[in-house]
Length: 389
Image 1 (tube, helix red, strand yellow):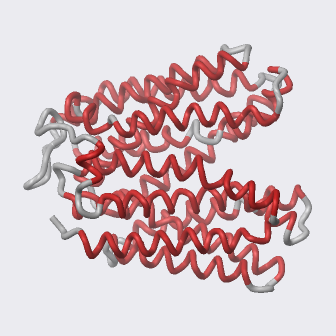
Image 2 (spheres, rainbow, N blue to C red; image 1 turned 30 degrees about the horizontal axis):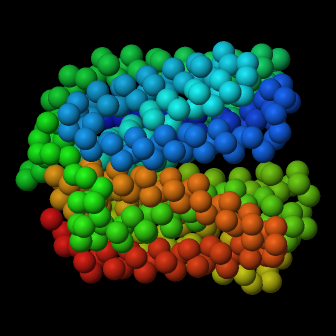
């Protein structure tokens, strides 16, 4: 039964990734039809992000009351409804309204699932599950591209993903007895109806919590900034054509996906702290490749190395949370970690956009290096402040 539930969770992680890259791949076809400026995609993305932050902060309260199985099922259903709403929308205002349940559903399921896996499964599964997220994120644009190239329109691309999410919701509802049968780890909390939910102020006062929030903020800021600006850096700084850069910038995400697949095997020999430090070291090597005058090959190698370095950090930070803060507080801490992550994702790439506008894209490696330095500093402070529970 535990293996059957794990298979369901793998499917859930694929579903988490499916919608994440849809807006970017569909927007070039959407904004002329909706008669809005191309820049308006940012407002939809911002609404989704705000909803995700809010629901992440509420994940502890919701999971304690309803349990991870129900929270996951309802959250995926909300996401499916929002995607179907996108598919029937004919105006920009309607998309903004449907973006609200889209974000609220994404945050709760992300925090609840990550905490459940951290409590009940080995580190290798956390790494492979996040690899499955990458598979979903890669499939989303492919499905949208199929709809667009077939003349079906972006609406049908969203509808196809909505149907897949509805199917997963049914699977999750059927799997609810499996979640109930999965007990809490020794000395920990099962998460449903046990204890009380912690307030944000109480969470921040936990030793090590501000450090892990800042470190996670930095990680997601670094990953999102590198992913968003890699193509522009290759064009503006390395002289590649826009077409070349668009394809080669994808090497960064290929590095993350491949690194997480490999990371699952490395966790058999290395613990979470060693995985995080290894990832930080590989990121540093990649940034150095971007800084040195190594030409096009050096820049591409740097992007791949940064992606490989990013791969183990996210899953290892999440998986180590119960060890640092205790199983009874891990859901609360993971919730604020996720919220911090989304703040970093929303804030830091636009900040670098301003740097590009006024100073130049050549500062991308320096920007990434500064974020990495703060991440390393905060993670090391966490290790000194918190003690394994």
